[in-house]
Length: 228
Image (cartoon, rainbow, N blue to C red; front, side, top):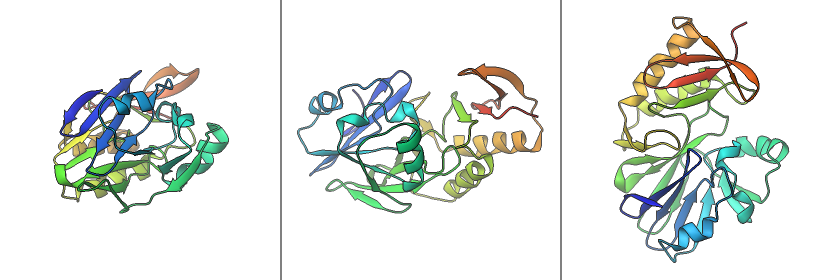
């Protein structure tokens, strides 16, 4: 795993990051990647602290190694998709907006960002003024907004709400660029609003055997439901 900053590491697994955050008393793994990497081996290379798992959402590229855990944290809005579509295993321990996970001298706040999925979350590392993980915020990435889980209106509302918050200067996304500034958020909002208003023409592309509408808004690309 690569060190991002003190007691914070990330492993890139087929384009998605697995994060590890350590406090004074315990550690937290955020997401388990795509391919089922040995999470315990990744963790033990950096800390001997007991650790738990939190998933930012239930898309398959974020839960590929969940079978290695009996329990995990996740927003309960992801439960139906995780268990019924992804055939996920383990017992979900629900987390909600504003909940705190205390690692001992390091408090992590859950921020709910519905839109990409109903239960998408990111983690605010309060002491280090950083957001860790999740798909809604990316620079030079692909933001998936097609399928029954996605909602562009909720996505825009979530990012507007996040813009009003203080407490973070940098974001470490699950995909694409490793570290971005909070200045990326208004650019994503502007791009998403232009898509909704029809100000940006769509390109038709095929992804996973499905025809989708592809929008390049400069800061990132949105993959959306096809225009009828």
